[in-house]
Image (cartoon, rainbow, N blue to C red; front, top):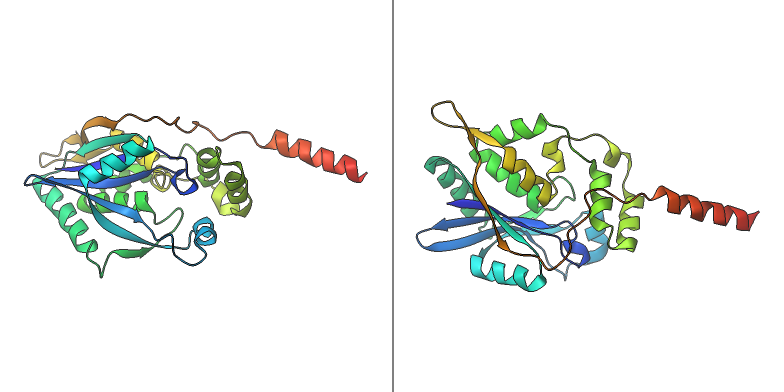
Length: 244
């Protein structure tokens, strides 16, 4: 049995976007495959984090340890059990096992294109022979990249303003739901409506069952980004008046 685990945002800056991972249960074992492992000792860690230029790892972790960590941090954990055929589940498991090997585990992190959520999404899509991507690319994103970044980093004002300033025009382009699913909570919501085509040609919900494993202590992010222009306008007028 394979499930998607989605973790709500935390209080530290690298936790603001939330997180997700894949859970594989078989033969009495429960192993979490986590694409979000990085090394704090990397040179220029904070600068590289802001630029999205870091090396990440796919790691295997005991399920109980993962639950304990997020419970301790006060973050929600939601499990979505995927309704895959035995062949699809085996293919996905084997893909994860091979990619978690030391010689394969490292990958170049990209803020929007290659993070914990997109790597997980792509692995599921591979097992489904492209069915997930076809569905999500056909739907427009609710928010573009900039809006998602500002929304999720809003509790940390310096981080939010810094990221907002360094993002270029590409962050404002309309996106598909496939692209927007770089945010773990967006992918979680998208999976609820996703389907797969079974052997009889019928559309079957991709998520068999969803359940919350850990109740959060922390408040969740706002649904939309804050309105920044009134504050910027006031600052600009104040500075302009002072110069005048």
